[in-house]
Every structure is written in C-alpha cells, then in structure tokens.
Length: 161
Image (cartoon, rainbow, N blue to C red; front, top):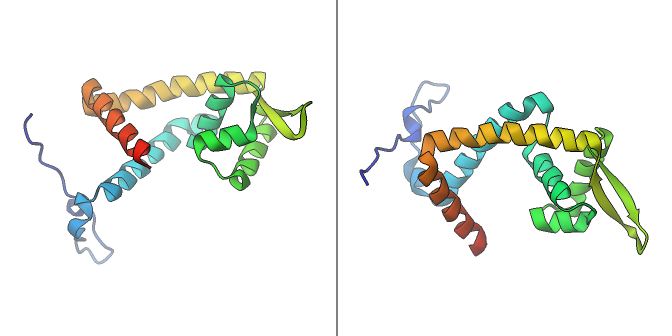
C-alpha cells in the first residue's frame, strides 16, 4: 500500500495574528485524531440532519427504541452510555416533538416502556435515508474497504474501554 502524505493541521490553522499554529506531537496522538475525526463527523451529521432537526444521540435513541419496542429507559442509557440525568431531558424533547412516548409498565410502576409514535417511525425512516447518504460520503472518501477497516479498528478501540 503506498504511503499517503498526511496534511498537517497547521497547514490550514492560523491564529488571529496570521501566524501558523504548530500542533507539535498532537497530530500523532490517536486520542487527538479520534476526537478531531469525531468533531468533523458530528459537524457533517448536524448539517445533513438539520432538515429534520435531529442530533446524533436522538437518532441513536430513536433507533434503539425502534429496534426494541417497549425498551426501558435504563436499558437505553446502558446500551448507549448515556447518564440517566442527561437522558430525561432528551426523552422529554422526543416526547414534546411527538416522536416517542413512555408507557407505564404494569409490573413496575417506577419504570417506563418506550415506544415510537407514528410520527417517530416516519421521522426515523427519513433519518435513515439521510444517514445512508451521510454514510456514503465516508465510503466515497475512504473506499468500501477503508470504511470496513476503520469500523473494525474503532470497534477494537471500543472493546478495550
């Protein structure tokens, strides 16, 4: 595989004084590269999803609820690594928008079963269509094989944590 010349971030980054910023060893740190890639991916996601006003975590929650009708709030939090205190406002927003609803669980009044509403299902289908195009942009940049390799490596990183 030919070596690809990597563009250094300081080639584009300039301080307000017009001076180029030297990133030093940052560009060789995996954690830094992961964070910058994540920031870039989220920015692209927000742009792609602005027509339906959906954020990455909301998309993930709607997907989990769709794939697991009746799932409990604590199960969604555990699956996605969301703090329970942060999940309540997120779920409140999905309910306010008419995308999801909580139903009491007869066996446990303290727990709620989560379901998508008809509007939630329609919105999620639109979101999946948007996401296919978003995902295709990565395939265009990385190639199918590169995308699959990156996903496998990222899964290894997540397994270690």
